[in-house]
Length: 193
Image 1 (cartoon, rainbow, N blue to C red):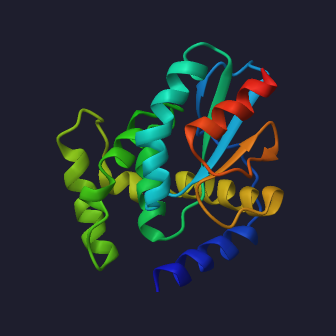
Image 2 (cartoon, rainbow, N blue to C red):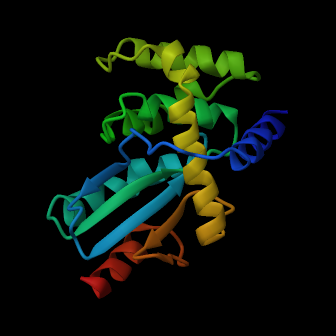
């Protein structure tokens, strides 16, 4: 049922005309002027995406992002309504910072539990309430601009890069086809630097 609702939202959004420029900054880390640019399409309910944030991202940050050699843009590709709602929280401040996104991936096992979207939403609300994010959960979830931004990412990924799974890495507009681990990613990046 959740997937049907998400598909409906995507098709509904496709048929709407977007007239105003989004006021939501994309989540980008590293040197935005670097010659090597990574885009990662991910879903906040995807365990492989969470593993990327836990296992690969810290090494990537240390060796390539913090040194200014590479930038990474985190794009939304929600696979279900729970991921869509979590993405709304990650973008709620509209400031382009990744701290909430990383936090939600690190705490994924705590909030993803539940058989209904209402239960998952309660878990999400609980997991962020004691953090100093200063988010109004209900306003974030109801924000149509954020929802449009997230669905635009998903539509772009499907249309431009034929993405159908998460995580998917794009390096300088080319899909990364190797097994996603730090060793393979590092080799690919070093060839481009």
